[in-house]
Every structure is written in structure tokens, then in C-alpha cells.
Image (cartoon, rainbow, N blue to C red; front, side):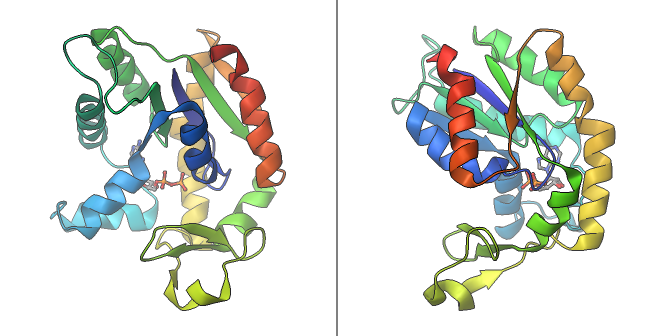
Length: 220
Ligand code: ADP
């Protein structure tokens, strides 16, 4: 099963990745995390690229596409196109983000006789987004994500929490504009192949989790 999570920043895609991947045995491919790791380990040496993350701009398609090919190649056996490590499929979070990336993904999946099964669109009123993202905090050691309002961190991790550089109100506005211009057209793109399933992502974690299970039940 190949699933794509699509939705604006702050719609809760990342929060649902772990449990969805565990439940369906999927490999997570989260390009935001992959890029943050590269920046943290200085593998991306061009300063301009690291800066891009801080302003909310998208990375060039070519860079992100290559990282995704690497993630797929590492986890799909070439000989019979089955997955390594008992994975039963892939879950994309934050990719594709442009129509160019979507076309590229289709192409590489084609080459390994696979295709996207479902695109889950996380729907949330834009008025909730800024509130959600500015309350987001990340444990800098474990990478675990908390929300000061809806998912409060336990007292023992408070000193270890950081705010992502792109989680400030000003940068969020830019990220939302970019989402509207460059990523939202993917809803129409995937509608043409009937792949879209809408998920109400405005409620608590458990309700969104249930909505995801309902949307995916026909694929398992
Ligand atoms: P969000 O919380 O906005 O969904 P992510 O963690 O997915 O954030 O991504 C953070 C940043 O990483 C993006 O704002 C962008 O700069 C970069 N990025 C992540 N995925 C992609 C992609 N598919 N194409 C281009 N840039 C990306």
C-alpha cells in the first residue's frame, strides 16, 4: 500500500505518521525530517539551502526527488520489487509538494511496478493553523513532537524542548501561501485518478486516527 498525506502545515500529518506506519507496517518517508537531519549533520553545506527551511521556502525539486529515490531504493528489493524489513508499503509525509514532484514520484513508482493507492487530504480551517503551529515544541534529543495546548509535554522534558525555526507566526504565513500556490493544486491532480480521501483533521488526535483508519480500510 502506498499512501500520501497531503495537507497544509499544522494540519497534523506528522503527528499521525508513527501510529499509521505501525498499524499498516508502512515505511515513513517524511521529507521535512530527512532535510532537517541533513542540515543538522551538515550534509547540506550550502548555507542558502539551510536558510530556505527557515523562511518556509520549498527546496528545489531535484534535491528532494533524489532523497526520495534513495529512501525508496534502500527499502525496496530490486529483484522482485518486494519491500525490505517486512514493510508492506510506503507512507509519504510532506512529499510530493509540487506537481513536478508528483509526476516524478509516479514515474519512479512505475519503474518498480507500484503506484499510489490513496492520498489522504487533511482538512482543517486555516484559522486553527497558526494557533497549532506556534504551540508546537520538539524534544531536541528524541525528536518527539508536543503541543503546549493539545499534547502537553511531561515536566521532565520541558528543558529539552525547542521550537522549529520555521514555526514562527511570520514564517507560517509564508508556508501557508506556498502551500496554496504550489501544493494545493495536487488535490486536483490526484482527483483525476480518483485517489483522494478527505480526512477531518480539526479534532483531537484519536478522532483523526479513526478517520484515517476509515479512509484506508478498503486498501488493507
Ligand atoms: P510542515 O510542518 O510544514 O508540513 P515539514 O516538516 O514537512 O513541514 O517540512 C519543513 C520544510 O522542509 C518545508 O517548509 C520545506 O522548506 C522543506 N520541505 C519538506 N518537504 C519538501 C518537499 N517535498 N519539497 C520541497 N521542500 C520540502
